[in-house]
Amino acid sequence: MRITLIHALKHSVAPIEAAFATAWPEARLMNLLDDSLSADLARDGALTDAMTERFLALGDYAAATGADGILFTCSAFGPCIEAVARAHAPMPVLKPNEAMIERALTMGKRIGLLSTFRPTLVSMPPEFPTTVEIVPKLAEGALAALDRGDRATHDRLIAEASRDLRDCDVIALAQFSIAATAPLVSEATGRPVVTTPDSAVDKLMKLLKAKA
Image 1 (cartoon, rainbow, N blue to C red):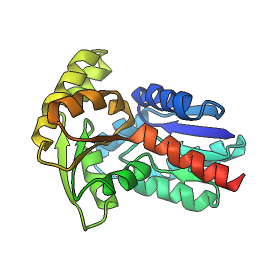
Image 2 (cartoon, helix red, strand yellow):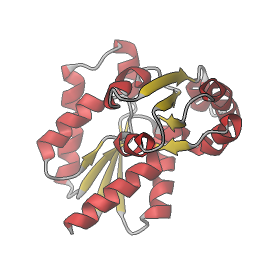
Image 3 (cartoon, rainbow, N blue to C red):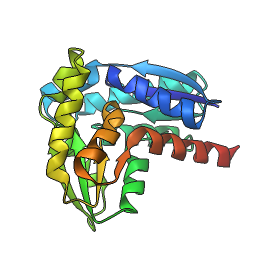
Image 4 (spheres, rainbow, N blue to C red):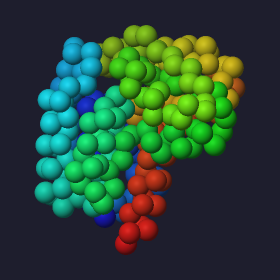
């Protein structure tokens, strides 16, 4: 199976490749990275038609290379990814967080949503059903630390921010780039933690193997 991974942050590549290596090593992976997407969203403050067109172009390219499935790892672009999914149905096209959301919903009604990228905390909560309470939390400064290569500070800021979510039933780490901090968050909060890469690989593998 050929899987195209589409990224808006360079930091998302390693976590998803690690998840595939563990859960589905037979998958053939292709990475597409446009790290201007996140910068442009942060600048514009909202998703635009032009942004959707850029996502459609990425999806078209992935399909043209023979992809059996597409997994986006950029958590703040839900409507853009939905447009790609419509354009390429019935090929599986997954948003990065949909499988994690499904898993989190089985674990409680009060869900902490932890992110290092502010737009994610705007775009992602509406993807949850209204029957649950979402408690958003931004780890201020963590992404900037990661961008300058300071992973220790990045991880520390996430763990510190997570302590405000200790009264939640489960904590969802909203981005691929922060998945590796799950053990730190669990230790800091005493709560169960769900991550995007593991959940996404599991769902995509099941979808494609069911089609085979």
